Length: 72
Image: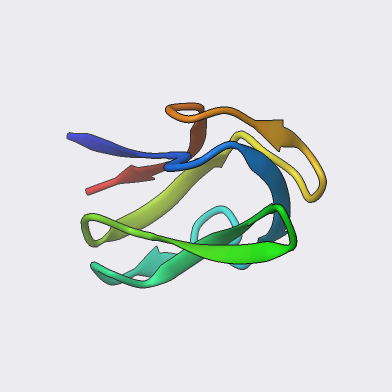
């Protein structure tokens, strides 16, 4: 079953800190969103392997935008 990291706030993607094929743990930082000069960490809700990265640095995201897909 796949897990999709969704943006929890609107803003710009400041960093993507994982790459496809990388194994991640639950609560590991996957990306950072910049909103009004504040950086907010985006953490994985599950452990898994990074399957797809749907955003790049400086992409604009809205609340609920799909960002990264993990395969369990």
